[in-house]
Length: 60
Image 1 (cartoon, rainbow, N blue to C red):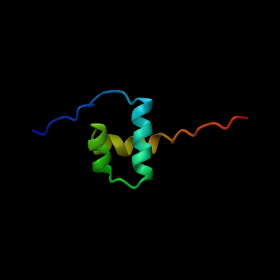
Image 2 (cartoon, rainbow, N blue to C red):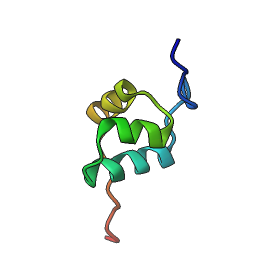
Image 3 (tube, one colour):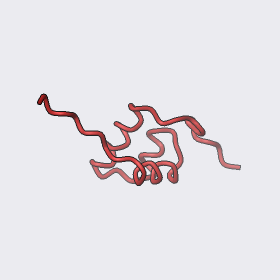
Image 4 (cartoon, rainbow, N blue to C red):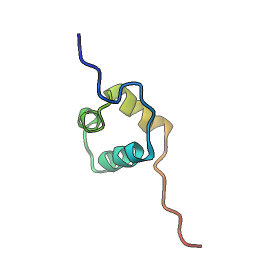
């Protein structure tokens, strides 16, 4: 039986999201992102399709 990733069942943090979108923007493969975050590939793909990267607000 395959081992569960270290963050299996854990909520996504802002730090997780930041790293996810950073790695994705740099062209990292889904499997590499999943390993870096300790998550499954399917959870990475799901998060990418359901969340949008947060942009920094300008100082208006």
